[in-house]
Amino acid sequence: MGTRAWAATLFVSLILCVGCGKADDPDRIALTIHRLLDGKAPDHVSAEAWKDTHEFYKRRQDAPAWMMDDQRTNADVAVETLGRAREHGLDPANYDEQEIARLRSLAMSEDAPEKGSEQRTDALAASDVRITAALLTLGRDVAIGRSKPEQLDPRWKKQRKIPDFVGRLADAADNGFHAWLDPFAPKHAQYIALQKALRDPAMAEHASQIAINLERWRWMPDELGGRYVIVNIPSFQLEAHQGGQNVLPMKVIVGTRDNKTPVFSDIMTTTVFSPYWNVPDSIVEGETAPAAARDPGFLQRNNIEILRVTKSGATPVDPSTVKWDDPEELKALAFRQKPGATNALGHVKFLFPNPYNVYLHDTPADALFARPGRAFSHGCVRVEKPEDLAKWLLLDAPEWTNEKIVEAMHAGDEQHVKLKQEIPVHIVYFTAWADDAGVVGLYPDVYGYDAAQSSH
Image 1: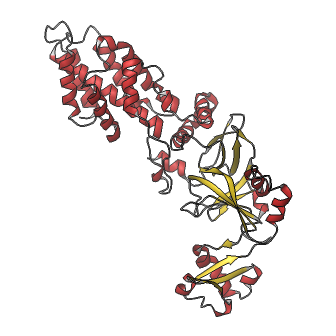
Image 2: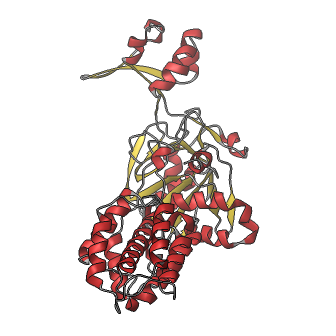
Image 3: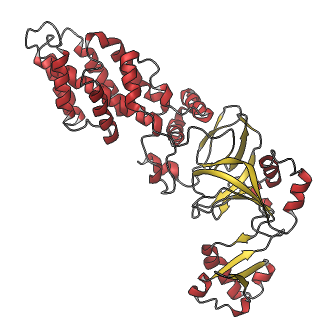
């Protein structure tokens, strides 16, 4: 039954005055609730929230939670809570806030059917279920979001743990409903800053953009880490956080729109000084091999060597023997750029193993950091201050002095250093982002994710 049909049925039931009972019978209401739960979910109620609604009443043996006389306080707070969806950038209309408020007040008015009547029993049961389903939908939306990040990019996944919606609502119904919604919301300082900006009249014209970014925080993990690195793609910025403070801000270069840097979280494990650059197959096919075929000196000038990798090891390959127009032969070869000043990864890279083969690294193209828009890479993240980042990552390794770090970066021999303390890395996409003072700035939608999210 659709929302309008449901509402119309309740309205007719409530204004009809039939029967002469003197008290509402909770057992009869429970039976009616049980029958309603066998039907179709109301509009705006997801399959997950409707399943939770079933579980909520199962734990109560289908007893009403909101519409009996002694439940009025909780019912009033429940209706008020639906209106608080606005605080989280959500539309109360998605939870039938106005209709539920009207039905709630009408059930207690002089026009309501007599207590104990069949029409009143039906109306109370239906309203009770409607409130429960709306609350569970709102709680779920505030906790983990209304939309799915996979709709923007298949690699982008939700990371928040799913709370016990039913258990918390059952406890609130029995023990008091005030502040029930708040524990579901993300606790991150950025989320709180965005909520504050949403109340600021100066940001009113950007309310939709702020709401989209609030939604993305519901996809983030609850804990970012005591020490962590966060890269925000739209602002082209990296922040290294420690003790709740951004102790090392810097500019970054991210992937182009055709080679998007993925949004994900993982754990940094290793710093690699004087790294080789293992040229990805896609770059070999699209750039390196065609350039080498045209220009026999290209590989030598760019310090790139070719290896044939087998089970017994890797052996060097003379470029002059390569059949550049044979795709199968190219697939059997590995191309890598030797360490040095012209290496595409610069003097150091930072590894956090992930299925996308994305990492942070230095770059010889420092001039690009002066550009306002910095989406130039093939997907990895180039950092403005690689030496400073290496020092920060190795703070708990006193043997790695500043001098030793600089020496290793320029040694020309690849060296892997395992971090004593693994560091969470979060690559994120927020076009509304608060600075260290809590002031929210707005950034370009470089990958078009805002536009795509608003259309869902």
